[in-house]
Amino acid sequence: MKTANTTLYFYLLLLIPFFSQLTAQKKDVKIKFENSISLDSVKKSFVKDDMVARVDSLWLHELVSLNSLNDLDENSTEDVNNEKVNLELPTQLLKERLAEMNAKSPFNIEYNEGLESLIKSFLKYRKKSFGRLLAVSEYYFPMFEEALAKEKVPLEIKYLAVVESALNPRAVSKMGATGLWQFMYHTGKQYNLKIDSYVDERHDPLKASAAAARYMSSMHKVFGDWDLVLASYNSGPGNVSKAIRRSGGKKNYWNIRKQLPKETQGYLPAFLATMYLYEYHTQHGIESEKSLLQHFGTDTVMVKNKINFKQISDLIDIPVKELELLNPSYKLNTIPVYNNQKHYLRLPLDKIAVFTSNEDKIYAYVASQSSLRERPMQSSKAIAGKSKNSGNNALQLYTIKKGDTLGSIARKFAVSVTDLKKWNKINGNKIAMGKSLKIKAKIN
Image 1: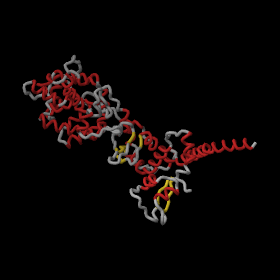
Image 2: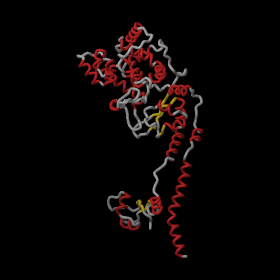
Image 3: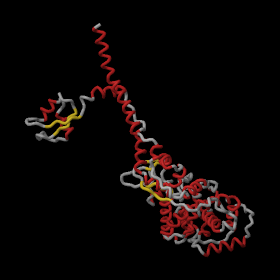
């Protein structure tokens, strides 16, 4: 009987650490629930400004629905000497309109049969696409014009983004060219566009437009001709220089065109055809497919803590698609926070008001969600060992008394002098009475 009791007592001792851990886990879960913040309770406590107009959100919704422009595809820059398209646009009238465009543009806009064929092809096959492009360009073109004007670059170059990406800020070509202006990786880096795991500023309309304008300005200093600047943007300045040499020093795009890569041969015509459709869309019955609500305002707020689009969407009731449209440079739909860099969130004005009025609550909710994230589990053996030995390894402070030495203190707590020095960053053997020492051991 005494042996049986002893055995039972022994097993109970072994089970104590496991029951202790189970209790701790329950307690931890309880704490997590107490610390977590429900989404509904946060949103109910938000300060809202009912005076802010809803025009912005309505127009933004319209803009997002128009932002699928993939049918204006790569074929727009193919060889323009294709089969003629019969469309009711008299050649003489086209010549007159091109002459009007040429009079007010630094580009060399002259009639040729290939350009006429491409314009008529666009009118026949891409009329609906241009209706949507007209709507989306109302958002992007003011950004482009500001960046181009700052670098003294012709404002007509804004139409190049239509040729490059169909005004899709998240466009990525087969070759890896990215964003509205289709920057390659190295060119983006060369023009100080930040590219890392979270952020790709080639997608950022403002920063990419500024970089594109700087590129155009620098190439104009090289070639002195805006047509050749566009050719260099497509194929690189090296190919344009080779075409000039092969043509015997000629510097007119149309005179060196056959010496350029095939894609670049159709690049300027596609640009001019796009410019024509924008200038004369009314005469061809192309109407902007947009809401009657034309006012659209946004603003930015600096992000203080890491937050993702899903959390923002849930908190301030804005679709993730709209956040992607306004913040295309965040590759993983997450806004990071770095020590030495600032990141901004762009929102419609009414949502900016909600966000800035409730920042503390928003970040508290995000922190509570992060605390609920699953953590790596420890093995039962490690947990049991930790519980069993935690009392022996607890950090304690010992006040040095008169007559104490490192050796006597080490013996008192059954630790080594080496560990004692390491814990307290002591180089020599001298210690001062009254000072405190950190000791990771249980007092005897």
